[in-house]
Length: 108
Image (cartoon, rainbow, N blue to C red; front, side, top):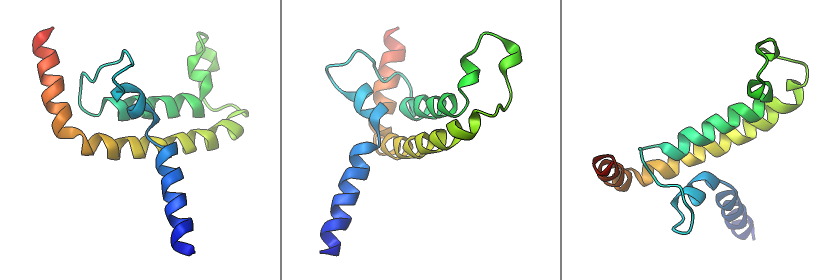
């Protein structure tokens, strides 16, 4: 019974991670893989924005740590865990990405 729970937990953890890779590698979406670890960089950037949303402000005085970040930083840490899973998927797909990104750079 413990094995079944472990397998279900592993399945759900895998399904919840790698969202950027699933979106960018899907054949029915517009984004293309143009560089290696592209999805990992996008996920890491999104986790920083979730943790510190004041970075999106046009006002330079809004920078720095504000009291609302007490709520947003833990959410950003959850997104950072997803970014680590994106890096694993990107590492598995690395040989394919080298070939594809080199061909797309030559084509442009």
